[in-house]
Image 1: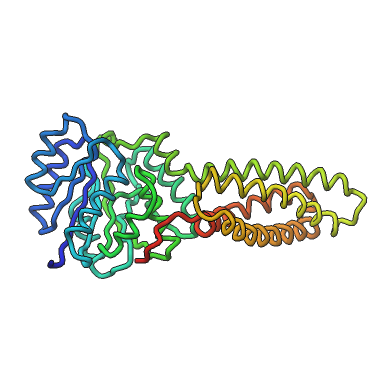
Image 2: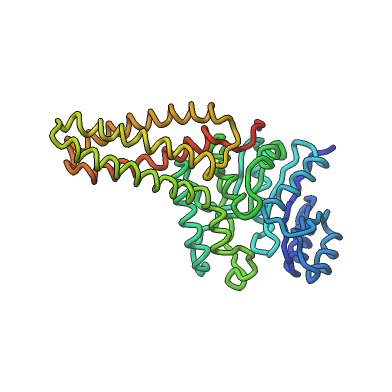
Length: 352
């Protein structure tokens, strides 16, 4: 099989914009096109029938989400194209320019293990929900990974078919999938390269099927659950720490603060492990192995926590309760990242 480039387009309730897009791709390139109909209604039958003249059209019997549509297309490409194929994913509503797709595919052709993403500048007349949504996800992503990505929500991406095993193993069926791909790349040290693209919003982005509340929850649900779990355990930890500080008020500060902190942390860490394994990361791995790794993490966090707390109380703030709050906030994302990617990891086990 000869090397090719393939444009993968997930489509849900597409209109004539899809046909115009397919015509332009065909007129400007020799790329193959795969369209995945994600359970569209009969209203889109005519459009999808026309699309079959330009592309291979795959069909979901019901709506399964953008992430699953991408995975269906990737599985098809994996079965019908060689490993050196370059793949670009783009949206069906005409808000990605074909010239930008060409730029991304050309960039991806030079590498086997990079994710090339089209990065919008978000200047000019941008819908408020799009601008705010990107700012929030960008900040969350940077806090969790220490990787700065300017456009975390872009659907225009390109990569080698050698990355398909990784892409298929990333969790998520709907809009959260694209964020999970970025998180997986950061975790696996897969380089993310941004290429500037034109920012296009048609009719104030009304054609988007993104549900602000439902899909935002899907993107952030794990970090929200982790935050809730951490808050519960922090309250247990903080209350117990405060009680112990009061009960040991006659002791020397250098003994009293670390002793109270360690005792409170042991209790809260045990609760935290149980909640995170069962409800946050929903890990099905060995409880013994996870517990052993969590113990190592908890011990490290405890040592760092106690050290920072003691230093703050002794040399900086003096106030024992405010110092405790600052230390807990500082270590929150460190704790999340290690648990997510090491202890309760669920990402693909195959290398790229």
